[in-house]
Length: 231
Image (cartoon, rainbow, N blue to C red; front, side, top):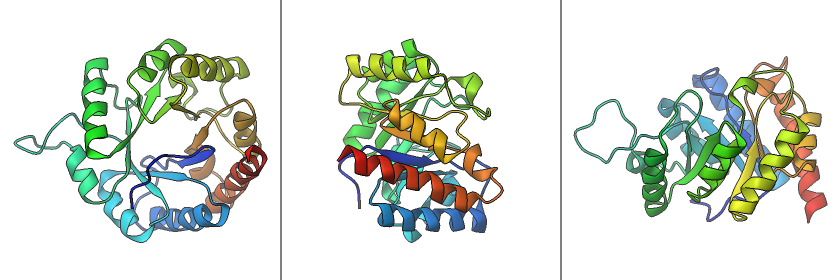
């Protein structure tokens, strides 16, 4: 079932390509349970080959593609269309990640088509200026993540986090702002929310943890704590 709107505070589990098959499904099933237990929106990204299985087994997750191409159904080959994702029940897609940078004109086109088809968009921004420009496109979420911080051992600076949120909201107060670099613990998750983030996304902090599921549980408990405080 498609969600009408992602609610803050939300959490994003982004295993990238670290996990696939049974280990990925194990993490997704646990995230699905936690989404119900904590009553929070959890976006779960996965490679295209894994999406349909997660959709079928995890009805409480906002299943999210890690990329979508600017193509319509037709003669293209090796591309992923918005229509193909929506058809299998995927609810959102990440755009403009450092691994898949897109031009502004391409982003405009994809966001417009995604809105028509009911697919939510999360657009990555490498700088405050890029984040402001992206906010004008009216995606559902802007992911403010300096490329050099991806996979590092500390979160973005307080100044970067607060200034990014402030400037994005000045351009578009309706867009949700996600922070997602260098997060290693539930304390990092809580700090980013207290600095004003609407959502937090994690990769290495979960998949490289000694006990990934336990770490995910701790992080989602932090989101739940923030959720109760904001009500």
